[in-house]
Image (cartoon, rainbow, N blue to C red; front, top):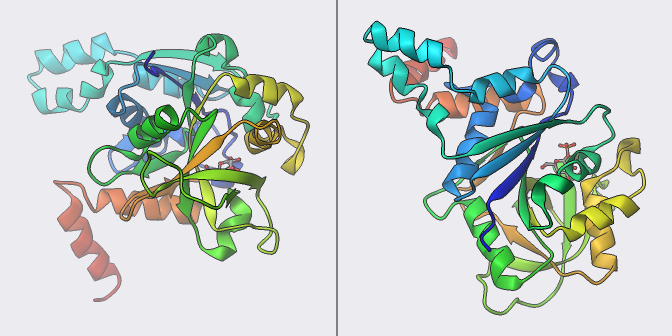
Length: 299
Ligand code: G1P
């Protein structure tokens, strides 16, 4: 049976982005012309998935509004002949069905994912974090290759990893890769021996960081039930994968290829960079922005 469902956690408070996120979700912050979460949904649709469950929270209703078909706005744009603006709403026609449920308490990413149990109906599914944009180079995309790796290896989970600088390992879940190649898959897929959530540099077994994209079987839910509080006093998804590994479940990792990148909007430094990266690629405004930056910098 093909994988068709994605669980997209968007319940985080976004406190590192206050005051911008006081009354709007961080996932709705614009990156170029689109809110972050629209990139995530487009990535999911491009990978062939057809259904998304958002795990939302208070102050997140703007996400639901964004993906709702706004018939009145369309009618008014059509009446006024604003066809170029109608094009900007084409994403509303995505071949994806949306579902929403709430995480009422901030008990961690693992707790948020656990709320997807009845939605996923015992089938494997994708987890895509709603605050990260994954830029793929060409096709198949990172997410599509991750689904393929999950299916080809028969692993209980497949996780995408990006290599990060040593002084950033404390921000991520970090993998200890197992030795030896896996048969039947490309060099970028490896067996995961262990995972550790947000280690210090001394503790980190590698620089391979969990990048916010996972494919998992329903075994994750039993593991989440056994997962106690971890880093930050929260139920960590990484710790549930650790339980699966300890129980002998195979988990594979997939490295990004050259040119592939995770764009993070977790703090203002990375958000500004991400915005700039995508705004510079804008077909109408990119060149003008480049010139303006040169002027600002006195170049
Ligand atoms: C979460 C995960 C972490 C992962 C990161 C980026 O952390 O717990 O393992 O590396 O997302 O995908 P957060 O950024 O929510 O603190």
